[in-house]
Length: 422
Image 1 (cartoon, rainbow, N blue to C red):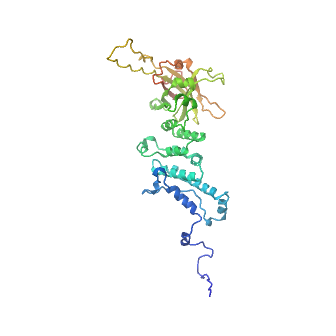
Image 2: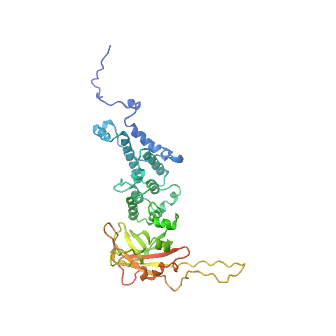
C-alpha cells in the first residue's frame, strides 16, 4: 500500500528548496572545478622542491580570488554568460586568468614583498597559466590595476632601499620576482617602469634597472664591439642641499668612450634628479641637418635634455672633464737597468690648472620630446670647447682603462650673467 506524503501545515520548507548540505557533500558540485583549481593554484608545489608557503605553519595570506561563482542560485542570466564561451576549456582558461589577476592584485595591494610567499604564488600562477596555454608574461604586462601594470604599482609601493638591505639577502623582493616572470618586457611596459621610477624619484632603482638587458637593451653595434660582457656606466647622483633646492651633481664613468663614439656614434646616459628624468648624451652630429641651429654634420657634440613626462625647466650647468690618472710606474728590477726610463703617455694633472669644463645652459625652458615634437635641449659642439681633444684617441682625459670620467654640476632656473655654479 502506497501512502502519499502530504506536507505538514506548519512546515516552513518550500516545495522547491535546494538539496541540503549533507546531500551536496556526497556529490560533486557544479563549481567543484573552480574550487579545485584555486586549491591547486595555491598549494601546487613548484620545481626543485619549491612549495607554496601557504602549506607552512605560518598563517595563510589574505588573498582573494576574483573567480566568479557559478552557483545555480545566482539565476539563469549568469549561467548563460558562462556558456557564451566556445568550449569548456575556454571557460576554464578565463577563470584561470581572472584568478591570476586577482592574486597578483592582492600581492600588490598588500605589498607582500621579501617573502617566500611571493615566489611560491607566482610560481603556481606560472604553472597554471602554462597548463591552460596562457602567457603569464602578457598578463603581468596588462594595465589591469587602475590603468597601470602590476610592475608600476610594485615600484610605487616599494619601500626605500635602506629598509630592504637586511631582507634582500634572504629572497628576492616583489618587483624582482614580477620582472622575472614578466620578461621579455614590451616597450609600453618599459615606459611604465620608467614613469614609476620618475614618480618616486628613485634614482638608485632606476640605475639598477638600466643595467638589466630586459630594461635597457644594448644595441647590436655595442654587442659586436664590446662582446657579451659590457662594463656598465657608473652614474652617481649627489644632492647639493647646501646650494639651494634646485642644485645637483652627477658623476659619470664611461667605459670604452672613444671606441664607442667612433663606431656607435652615440653614448646616452640617463638619470633622475630633482623630480625629472635627464639624458646626457655624447654623439656625432648626423647628416643631413634638420635645422640651421643643429651642429655641423660629423662634429662631436654633447647634449643635455629631459625625457619622458618630466616638467619643463631652464637650467644652468657645466660639465667638468677629469684628467686621467697617470699609470703607476713599475718598480725597477734588480737584475739589470733599462736603457731608457719608462714613460707614460698620459699627462700628469696640474695642481694650478683647473679641470676643463663645458658650459651647458638654457635661457628657455627645456622640454621633453614627445610624438610629433622634438623637444628642447642644450647642444654644444665639442670642437668649440676644451672637449675637442676627446675626439682623439691619445688624449689626457682617457686612461689606460679606456674610461672617461666627467662630472655634471647643475642648478635649475635661468642662468645669470655669470656662472652661478662656479
